[in-house]
Image 1: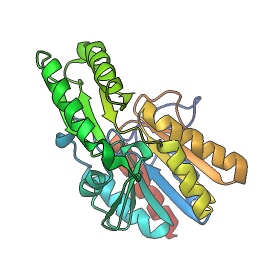
Image 2: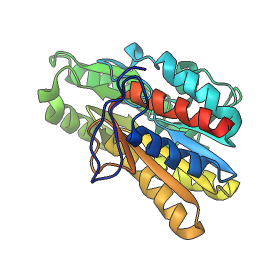
Image 3: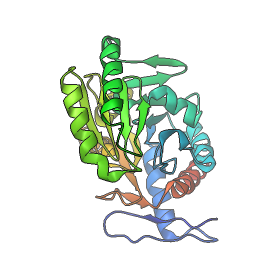
Image 4: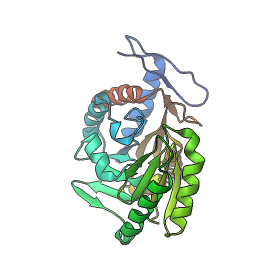
Length: 280
């Protein structure tokens, strides 16, 4: 078994797993098992940085085969598998490729379920404004090297991961152009999004699903500040209903969750071990 970096809560150490599972991995699996054994149960997971290593550009990112294998193993043993992502929901489905999962994209604003893409009513009215805003920003920022524009359906993103020093320039330009057209600007990690003024984030999406399905066991996995609303929503659901909730943070996310793992490979190990434990 490859090395696995995993810790539990603020006070526990990071570890390496070699030939045999270490006690910390066993405790992590126990926490996830106990949550997902409470039915109905759900796993909510981010994609980029969680199931897929971060890439310079969105199209280069790939879900690790081990992550997909572990999700497929876990899916029959839980009631809901939900991918909560900043990507367009249909793009998330193409990336993960599990048909009976629910894909909540654009940070909670749209849903892909069994081949149907559902977006907020009226959002198409902003398509023309978004197209003009994108064209304007491409011209305004043409002299900034390393930028990548990404179409996100409900809007577009400007990635500056390859040119971090351009963050301020990109944000200011996006805010000016968007404000002139009644569009939203959302500052994310290493990119800015310009989108239609629709409501929703990962937290509100999680709460709606948890309430609608009466979830009694919830596991949430993420690696980025934009996942913080999902973690907070899961804790709020636990507080209101008594559901068992476990949060898993990936990489250097602060504050750490109930379990903290090193990278997507460690996520795959943890989820596969949990799926096996639920078989017994």
